[in-house]
Image (cartoon, rainbow, N blue to C red):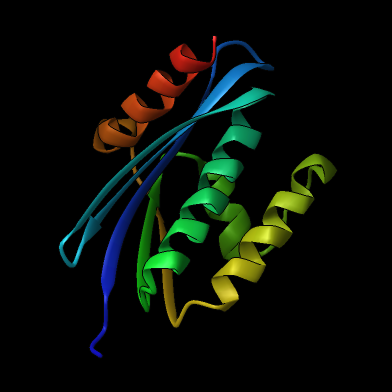
Amino acid sequence: MGIILLEVYIDGASAGNPGPSGIGIFIKGEGHQIKISEYIGENNNHIAEFIALNRALEEVKKIGSSLISIRSDSKIVVSSIEKQYVKNEEYKPYLEQAIKLIESIDMFFIKWIPDSQNKAADALAREAILKGK
C-alpha cells in the first residue's frame, strides 16, 4: 500500500460567542471527496475550531491515510498544535485529544490559511448552524 495523501480543510463557526455552533470539514485526495457539516450545540468559536480539527482527525483515521495536510483559518488551533500548548485551560482537553489522534498518523502537517482559501469548510460550518437552529 502506498502513501495516501489527504488535504483536509476545517472550520468552526458560532452564531454568537458562545452561541449555536457548527463544524465544516472538507477532505480531498486519493479519490476521496468528503464533506462533513455537523451542528455541535452551544460553543464559542475557538472551541468549534478545535472540535472541527478533532472530528477531521477521527475521519481521516477511518480512511487510513498516512499523510495528512490540515488547513485551518484558526490561528489559535494551528499555533496550539505546532507548540503542543494552549494558554486557555478551556481548550486543553481538545488539544490533548488532537495530539493523541495526531500521534497515530505517520506524517501530519497543519497550515494556517486565510478565510478566502477556506470557503468550502466555512460554508459547511455555517450550514451546520442553520441545521441546528
